[in-house]
Length: 142
Image: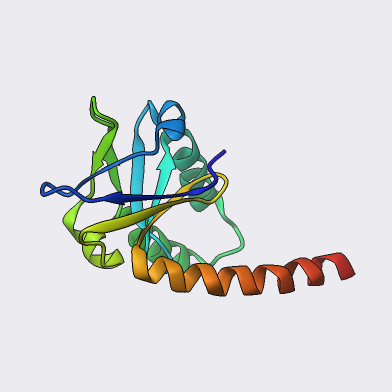
C-alpha cells in the first residue's frame, strides 16, 4: 500500500529516488506510464499485471475503444528496475508529459504511485482535497 507524499530533486540524468519505505514493494521492478492527469503513474509489476488483465478482458468497452485504450496506456509504458541507490530513471517522454524538470513529488495513491511536477501537484492536491469531502458525503448518502 502506497501513501504519503515525498519531494525529491531529479538529478542530471533524469533519475529520482523512490521513497525508502516503498522500495521493498517495488523490488521486482516498476512500470511507469502516463497518468490521466499531467503526472506519471508508477505500478509495482504485480499490480501492473492486474491492470493489464483488466484491460484484456474488459467486456464493458467496445473492441474499438479497448484497442485505443490499450494503445494509449501500453505504448507509453516503461518497465524499469530500481538501481542500487534506490533510484529510477524517468523516461524523457514521461517527464515531458508530466512537465517534471528539477523537482518531483511522489504521491502514494493506495495501489500505485503518482509522480508530479511540484507546482502542478500543489494545485491538484488542493482540488482533490476539496472534492474528496464532497465525494465522501455523497457516498455516505447511499
